[in-house]
Image 1 (cartoon, helix red, strand yellow):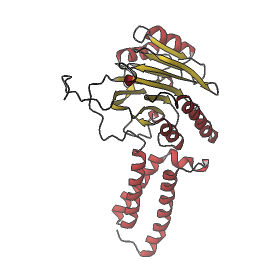
Image 2: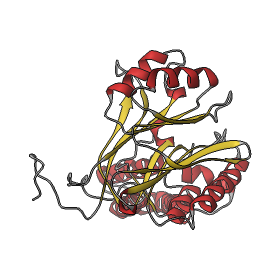
Image 3: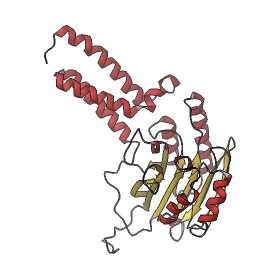
Image 4: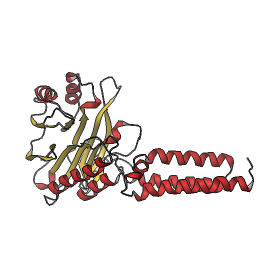
Length: 324
């Protein structure tokens, strides 16, 4: 397809200006709430610029094609940095693994108590974080899960903010702390003898944004409360579990994960998936050997996340369990 120079320039400069502006706002992440739309919808914008690049490829507008593909590459690298950056999941090693499940009850049928309990019991989870726990759910879960998960701590609430933790491993240093009446649970579990096998966990639910700019200010304050609670404590492995109602690449989330030395367990981003607001982070002491989404028994809807973690710098094991 051949176009005259005047028509090319009429398209070239506006397209380059708009794609440059959108890419810069995503990469630089200015604090002004006016630009929040660009940050929150970074994957969609990236795919849009990629689509423009494909269009320019077919129309043989090569300069515009190079600009579009270049910005797509920059955004891809940026988004990839907020996921699990390992090229593949870690191979199983000789360290004991920790399997964690995170469930948000609002993703599940509100009255299907037994189904959710069966899913959790039939899993191989060692630690289960459940959020949006109301008093009736709290009673049901404690009744049905206590035999399989004897160590329980909960802070039920009639609002969104109720949380509970169920574990097959004993708790220590368990604490419920609050930010503006929103409960957070933290504690220690151990996979071995001494400090080398200890892991601190914290589970949190933050209020939905409802497209309210004040939400982001309050979220950062909430994260600061958690950081102040955990920083200065023992330099041991950490896991942060939660429905943070924010994407992993946003400045608030990066502030939180960088302050606590956390890495994302996810290796992919699906902007259309509700799970993009659910997160399981781990410190650099640990590595992820498996990650997936948790579904209802009929597979119709996602209700949470599941991850398998192990300590790093441990000899690998072959299929028979022998050290390689």
